[in-house]
Image (cartoon, rainbow, N blue to C red):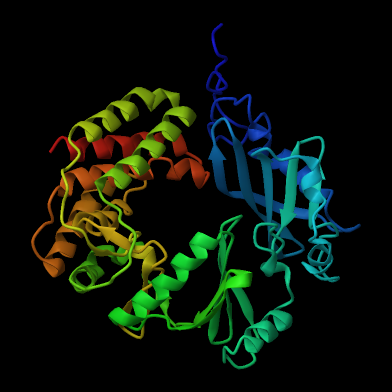
Length: 422
């Protein structure tokens, strides 16, 4: 008997002009999760009487074909922005609502919030709905901030009383959140391994002295929470990527020549495995470029570089990790620190500038040339790593729910083909 194929024909377009991925029998809720009107109705059922949704935008799509999907929404209610998250599949069932998080659910948003029910299971959609700061994977987020700061103080971590204002800098549903209060930053993790990597990364950054980077105050393993100093700086915009590239290259040189024991190894096989996951995902959501994507992966497998020198590496080096602190450049987020070939960080910086827009590859090439001016000689297998990094970025337009994500995805695949053909 032939095995049923879960992914069906590609849908032409969604109601707001965005193309839809193929229907997935394992995640039948997928198209509904991406339908703004349908989700506005679903989320409206969580609100207090009289509250209304003024605007809703899909901001992040974490989809695993044949398994499940988590979609984040930016929701405007009475002039304020809120974050809601819907999850379907992943062996999810209504019983997931029955957790020990009842106190957190009651306190998560506060009595002044327009959201009456921060955690619900929508039977019609077949999805679990949560409103930030409630996140069952990170229950620490639902604790009131004063209580959280008291726990930090009891752990012997001196940070003062926190600030008058609190803001969420980063939130990745079910993965991590970064919150600033006063002069400190609290970073919560959903998994123990990610928490340990975060602690290690902060220690590495402090030891290297790469610019005015953050300083680790302490960590609470039982809460999977790190506490670090806040930096008063400005994120370096993508438009300055070529301008600051020589400085970034020089900083990479310091990192790559350092001695940092105990880092996990990320040789070319790990890069290839990551590229393979991206290729399979791209082929699943964009069947029109599936053949080209899988052919590109086959060529990467065929020409994979042999064992190379491994050096301490950032692991996710790109323009979004750079902060301008009164004219000095600081490097952030060493959570992915590893021992890797020199080309990994160098090409990550360039590939991050390619998002499927006209002229992206030329801009990435120019930034790469400037980066090498500060770094030194081009590392071994430069083009192979750049093509692999580009293939890894192919799913990004879909995951960020770009209006023309199909076109952008094809353009990124074309850029990777061009690089590998050099």
